[in-house]
Structure formats: structure tokens, C-alpha cells
Image (cartoon, rainbow over all chains, first blue to last red; front, top):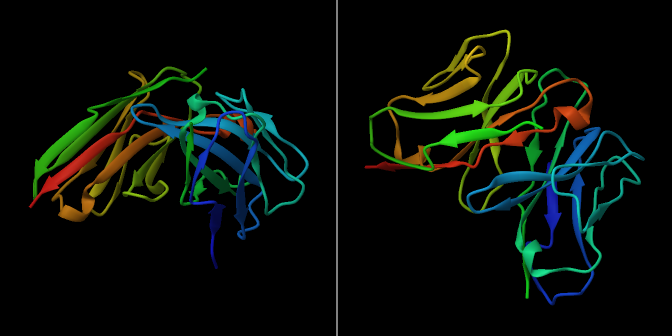
Length: 114
Length: 115
């Protein structure tokens, strides 16, 4: 069982380019999340999805979009990348039907926008 | 929205000593407080959590305490070992709707255990 995977591992991107970060989980979790991690700021929620077909905005959603066509996949798209989106991006999933909302994190994608 | 503050940002201890990391939260409706450990190059991993109806929880060398009145909670690691070296994050969440149950993280504490 792989758990939760992300691709690519790292990417250098020119400003203005479009980029999709991929996230797949095989735990059949209903909830999925995207966070960005910046030094000194911890992890901040970008977007989340309660279940397939639904999405919601987190703390820092501007410049990002997500889709949840099925249970397993939750891609994050940067329509036109800017240098301030340089960060490490983590995808997570959880079984939100349980009282203990333990989130399982992927290994992260390190994105540099030049 | 919720705001979680975490201190200290860095902590260095000698092997065998105890380490304490403290967090405060702003929203009195928060009712779930997990702690995550992040090793270099990896995603965070849950190590212990506590719900608001409990004041203390212990798991081997790790314990968490919660003071609802003061809105702060702490992570205690006893008999520290070099493999405890990592970045630790506290977090808080509330409610049953997944959006509201999404975690608000503290800024992290880099713990270094000196052999």
C-alpha cells in the first residue's frame, strides 16, 4: 500500500507558466487537503475537499485551483505561477467520518518559480 | 479564524533530557489538538493528539497537556534520543464539517537532541 503519493518531487518553473501538482491516495479517504509550507510559517491550507465532487477554499487559496473528480486524486493547479508561490506543497488525506481526524501527508513537492 | 502560536522556534537539548514545546490557540471552539513530527525531506506524521474533553494524554515518552481555560497545550518528550530530532508542529481544529476540521498549524519547533 503506497498511502499518499505526490508528483513531481520537485520542479523549477518560469513565472507565468501553468503547473499541476498531482496527488493520489489509495486509502479510500473521503477528505483531501493541499497545504503549502514556508519557512517560519508552518503549513497553511490552500484548498480542501470533503468528498469527491466537492471542494472548498482554505486560508491561502488565491492563485490556486483544485478538482476532485474521484476519491483517489486531488490535483492542484497554478494557472499562472508567480515567484511568491515558491514553496513546498503537501497533499494530505483523512477519513473525516472518524472523530479523530488524523491526516496522512504525502512526501511533498518542492516548487521554485523564477 | 483560528490562530495557533508555537514556541520556541528552535530547541536544543542533551540526550536524556526532557523537551517541552508550547502552543496557544485563539478560537475557544477548537476541540482537537494534534502534534505532528516532520523529519527532513518528509511529510508531517501524527505522533499524538488530544481532544478537548481530556486534560492530559501519554504515549510512552510523549505526553500532551491541554488547558482549555488558558487556551494552551504542550508537548512533553522525556528521555530524549537523537532520533527525536525533527521539526514538531502543533495544530488545532474544530467542528465536524471537514472544512472546519481542517487543521490550523503552528509555525513549528526545530528540536535538536545532542548525543
